[in-house]
Length: 225
Image 1 (cartoon, rainbow, N blue to C red):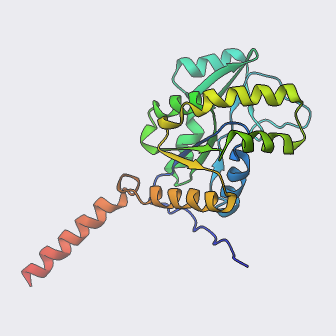
Image 2: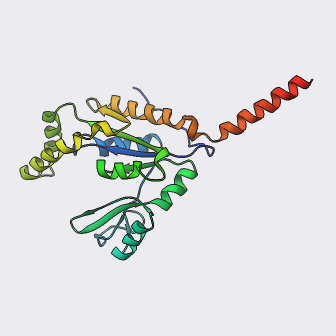
């Protein structure tokens, strides 16, 4: 039996990632998000702000940041939302400040957003830290089978989700990475590989400049002896 290796804790000398994970409903986004968090529990979910009232059992700062419409619109006007949208009369968005604090401390933030939200984040001041990944189903027949296997939606809802999936899939080329989720274990392994490599990009390791400077000092010292 194989054992999934535990990811190392994020080093304090690198900036965190903004991980955008998108897919049509049923392609495995929620499952793979949970698996990433199990692999490395330093990865945090972005907690959205919303103007809708809390539902029974929901807690402020845990499920959502519940705010007034005036406060939300004020944050948008000040550029304090990385992305936002209005859904069924309520505003939803990703506050910028807690995300900046987290990535500056070396933590990665996972966003469960559609292509529109992902595009806004990629155009934000934090765009350099974005890694965007889109999940494709192996086939439309398999996508429908997965939706039906949930046993949660009516036939009408499933038909609506299938119609929406075509528009969502049409934006696949706007992402940095695109994975076909035809095998859950293999897809998870590829996701882990992407994050491991992105964490090592030069621009995300600001300590390297200082390290090279120290090497140059050592070189000069050796040259003088």
